[in-house]
Every structure is written in structure tokens, then in C-alpha cells.
Image 1: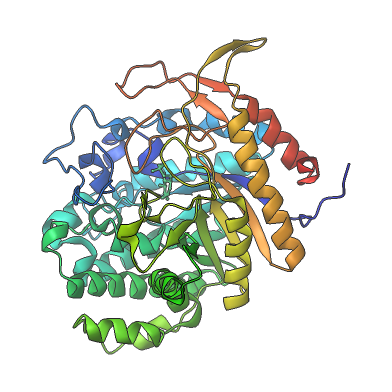
Image 2 (image 1 turned 30 degrees about the vertical axis):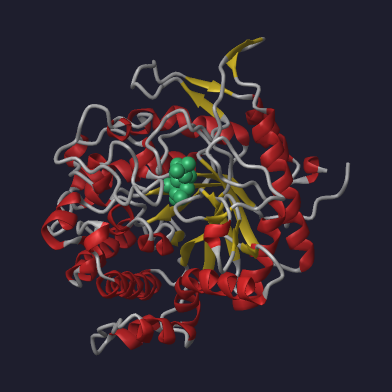
Length: 478
Ligand code: BG6
């Protein structure tokens, strides 16, 4: 077998988010989050559909309310992750379990105790937790009463929340992420930023001011975390989507640059501690004036220890996008690239793009990187296997294998990478569409789009495949 190119201490694992898999949305004193009123997912799916459907109250068709019941089955699920050999498990803390409304002065002890149990269970197997502090689950009260991150008050509420969990888990958790896909707030302001103003009424001024509040909050969390435990490793998390020029026309290349800058804005500020020059022209031309509090400049200077990102797909960009088919994608999109195939949900599959992203981020920042999401959402069919029900998910194995080979290439290019967590190692509810049928897991969960199913867990073919990848530290990929 070929020698591996993955470093000895490489952190292999999987990634989840509380709102997509815990369920128990009202147990243990949990308050509602924005997800509990998004039964159809939180992402506008086409240009004509500017707003996802937001309900007044949680409705029975919202699969996230019960998720896949990790809240009650965490022991069984963590045992399966351990069987695959996970070194790391990414999960988020549901903010509304700790501060049910978000603006209370005292935390909810039952919520804190739940995560103690989960971290203790992970520790039994030597699995390192990687914790996202805010993964598309702003407490609903903060959205309704304050308009989410559009309001500067959110910084203080977030500060109280992160101080609480940093202090409580300072000896149990070392790796932290401040905001999931922090750049997504530009595209899904309610789901990502708890901003209740309808998209069509939301000004660029208010949107970028909300971005500023999140960036200040993130830097503040980094500062506070390092004060509480200097060994903490605190990273930002961005949605990475490389763009290619549709043609060699320099104007298409310029379109790529402008698309990329709206994503770099977030990682640049997290890594360099200040606003980049290129955004100033955009602000000027769009009459955006970010209001800085006196302390903001200093707070922003507290930069992250590492850059983490999700990667599913790439897009193409053109100066005249109307001339091409538009490409659907993970929260943001572009034009369809004729060189690439797409998933059942239209996300264009591009393993080489992952190598490019890794090189790009590393060249830009010289900071360690962490791939915290990657995977294929696909329709799985449960069949009878020799050891019970299973899924022959060769397509998923193929996707992951090709991406991991490109990760290996990037490692040989000289990139420093701490780890790799696949999205949804166990099937969970989709963020964009709230479907159960968009499955990513190595473990099948018997739950369906209509809410039926026993919640039983079954190992797919990819379960043993990933187990072998981890056991050989990547050598089995070749
Ligand atoms: C990322 C999110 O955008 O992609 C996850 O961080 C999400 O929460 C994942 O689930 C996959 O997207 P989807 O829409 O297929 O669930």
C-alpha cells in the first residue's frame, strides 16, 4: 500500500449542527431558535424566491423539531463514530439551550449539563470535540425582539453566552469555531443572522452593519477564549466556494475577483484583524458606512488561530451571467460550469477545487487550516445486506475519495491542515431544504420527509470505507 501523505496527528472525523440533529427542541428548558420556524429550510432557492417560508410558531412539518433525536441517542451515535475511529467530532452548542431567549442574565443549567454529558461521552473514546458556537440557530427571541445581528446588542448577548460555555467547558473542549459559514449572512440573513427584516426590505447598509457586529463578536470571542484558556484553538468558519472565469475575457476574471472578495472579506478580517482596502470602494459606491464603536478596532485585532471552512462545490462567474445557465449551490451560486457534473441538488462536484481552496487560503494567511465540512447530499436506497439493512452508496465513496486525494495533493503542495470532518457522518436534516432525503451520512437514519420512520440507525457501505481510511491514516485512498 502507498505510504500516506497525511500527518500522524491528523484529525479525522465528522461534523454536525445542533438544530439539524439534536431534536428535543423544547426539552431541558431549551428555547426556540430561528430553525424552529423554518420548516422548508433557510435558504432562498431561486432568484424569484427571495424569502424562505418563516412560520409564526413551530409547525409539525418541521423535521428539525425532532431532528434525528441525537439528544436521546447520543451514546449510541458516539459509539458508532468511535467504531469508525473518529479522532474529532464537530458539533454545535444550541445557543437557545444555554440562554433560551438569548437575553437572560443566567444560563439554563439543564442545557449546560446536556453538553457536559456529550463531551464526557466523547472523551471516553478519546474523540476531540470541535465546537461551533453559533450554527444557524440564533435564539428566535433575539430575531423577533432585536432583529438579530442587525442590532449591536447581540454582541453583548453573544459575549455572555460564549463566556459561559468557554468557562464551563474549558477543560473539555480545545477547538472552537465562532460562527458557522460566517459569510452566509449576506445570502440567508434570517437563518444565518437572525435578521427578521424581509430580504426585499433589508438595506445593504443594515446588512453590512450586521456583518460588522458578527465580526466584532467573533473577534471578541477569540480574545475572551484565549483569556479563559490560552490553550484554546479558536477559528473562523467560512463557506468556501472557488469561482472560475467562464471565459478568458478579462471581464469574466474581474467578475470572479469581485465574487471572491465578498467571501475573502470575512476570512481577511478574521486573519488580519482589519477591513481590507478592496471593500472600501464597494462600500463607497453603495453608500454603506459602517458604524464603528470606539473599541471595535482594537477588538478586531484579536485574530484567529486557524481558518476552517466548508467545501462542497465550485461555481463559474461571468460579467454577463444572463448569457448562461445559472448554477444552484450551497447558499450562494454562479453560472453553470460545463466541465463539471452536479449532485441531485445541482451542486457542481469539483474535487480539484478543494486543492485550490486549500492552497489559496494557506498562501493568503499562512495559518493552519481545517476542513470542517465536505460531502455529498444524495438520495439513498435502503436494501437488505448480509448484516441487515444497508445502503450501497458507492457514489458517496467516490465523491469523498476523490476529494481526499486532492487534500493529499494540497498536503504535498505544502499546506498545513489540522483535520477533515465530513458533513453529516450520520444522516440529518438539510439546512437549505429541511429535507431528510438529502442524506450525507455513513450511517443511515430511518426517518423520511413526511416525518415517518423508526429513527433506527444502519451502517452504509461507506461506513467501513471511512473506517479504513482513518485506520490507515489515508493510505487506503490510493
Ligand atoms: C452548510 C451548512 O452550508 O452545508 C450545514 O453549514 C448544511 O448546516 C450543509 O447542512 C449542507 O447543506 P444542505 O443544505 O445540503 O443541508
